[in-house]
Length: 147
Ligand code: TYD
Image 1 (tube, rainbow, N blue to C red):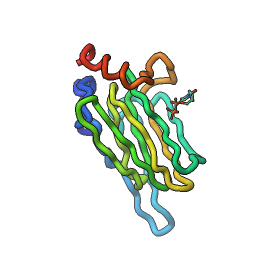
Image 2: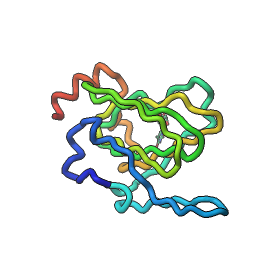
Image 3: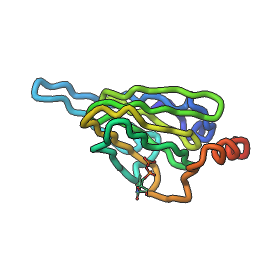
Image 4: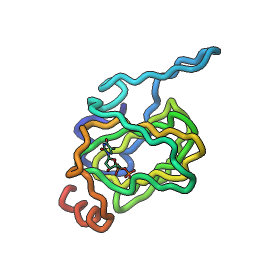
């Protein structure tokens, strides 16, 4: 990954970039692998996935104070909307060999899931509710303190 560990606290959507994952193409089916700290700029502490998402559902809609994540469309497609309080960007995820890196203190929503899609998230920390900011106005209030 291009982001250096020292960059990750700048809370800017420009640091949320697509990660090109290795892809072994094969007529029998392609293979992608991810090695913690080699293809990610954090140690992977947790993996979770969203699946059986009904049409029109909106997941996410929160920010994390410390958590770093990489979001991958394992199957199908969905949109990831990222917002740093000044700028917003939409990533349409539809390839399982790209990951979207999300640095801390980015507001993110995931929506427009295609039928049967699976959203995989690699996370730098164990689950911790106190790391969440779930209220957008609270998020905006917290940004100046952290910059
Ligand atoms: P949440 O992260 O709030 O998902 P979303 O913002 O998409 O709705 O998680 C939903 C619920 O799942 C919440 O009650 C916390 C729980 N959860 C865990 O217990 N462990 C986890 O690793 C995650 C991601 C969620």
